[in-house]
Image (cartoon, rainbow, N blue to C red; front, side):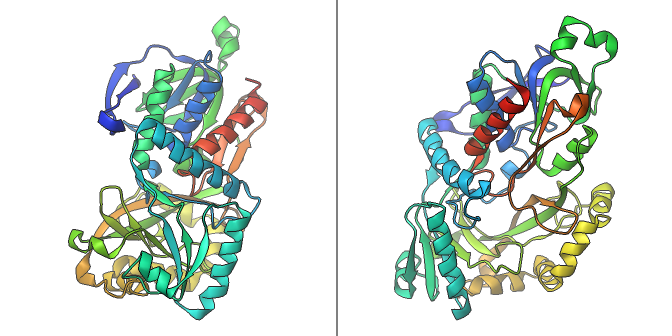
Length: 442
C-alpha cells in the first residue's frame, strides 16, 4: 500500500523530518504526478486556489525532491540569458522575486551573493554586452557592466577584461524549499503518496464509471506495485520521465527527454576563500550549455562545473551508472544523433573533461589562475532532463501539453521545465494552475 507522507518542520525551517502514515482515501479531484519542486509548487498553488478540492501528489520515491530538485546547483537565477518575451524569461524574473519572498516568509536561509559573467577574451565582449541588453529587456534588476578593476574588487582572485554584474542572483537549498512546499500542501489538506510509481492511466471500467464515485473520479492511476487511485484529472510534473508518462497516457511522445549528466568538482575547504559569489563564463552561442562556473553553496562549500555528458541512465548520478532501457531510448532517437553531429567537437571535449581532472581545472584557471588540481575534489552530479525535438533541437522553453480522448482530455503534462525551473517554481505553478483551470474547468 502506498503511504501518505507527513512532514514536520525543524527549527528555522530546517529540512523536514518525514514520517509515513497509512493512506486515508483513494479518490481525488486532481492527482499531481511527481513530487519535485515544480509538482509540489503546483499542488500547493492549486489547493490554495481551490481549498475544497481533494488533491494528491503521487511520488515514486520515498521522499519529495529526490532527483533534479535535490541535485542542482542551488542558484536563484535572475533571468539574464533567456529570450526576451519568452515564458522562460518572464517566469524566471517573477519566480526569483517570489522565491526570495517565500524564503523570507518561511525563514528558509539564502544568500544574495550575486553573480559575475566574466569575459576573459576580447571576442567575448560583444556577446557580454548583448547579454546585458537582453537582461535589461527582461527587466532583471541591478545589472551593470564592470571593468577589470571592479571585477577584482568583487572577486579578488578572478581575472577578466569585463563582466556583467548581477547582484540579484542568489543561492538557496532547493530541497529545503521543496520540502517546505510539501508541508504547506499537507497543512492545507493535501495528500502525498510516496512509493507510488505510475505505470498506467486509464478510464474506469464501465461498472465503476456508472457509480457515483466513478462519475466524479473516472480516471484510474495505477502504480508499479498494483496500487490504484481514482481521480477526476491528472497533472504530470515528472521531469526525467515526462515523455514516458505522456506516452502511457496516450499523448504525443514528442518532445523526447534525453538525460545529460553534469559532474561537479568541489574546492577543498581551505581554498573556499578564492570564491565569494557565482562566477560564470560568457556562454558560447555555438554550444548548448553554459560551461564551467564557480558556485558557492549554502553549506560554505564551492562547486565547480558542471560538464555536460550523455547519461546512460535517467537517474544515473555516477559516471558508470547504466540502464539498458534508458541507453537504448537515447541512442535510438534520431534527434540525439542530429544534436551530436552538430556538436561533435564540443561533445568530445565534454567527454574528455569528464575523465580528466586537469582538463576541467584548465577551464577554471581561465578565471581564477590560482586554482590547481591539488585544490579540488570530485564532487556530486546531477542529471538534467533535456527535452529534444526530432530535428535535434534543444527545447528551450516550458512546454505544457495535453491530449484528446477520454483519458488525454483529462490530463495536463508539464513536458519541459528546464533550468531555471527551481528558481521559477512558484511562477510556473501559477501558470500551470491557470492552464489547469482553463482545461479542467475547476
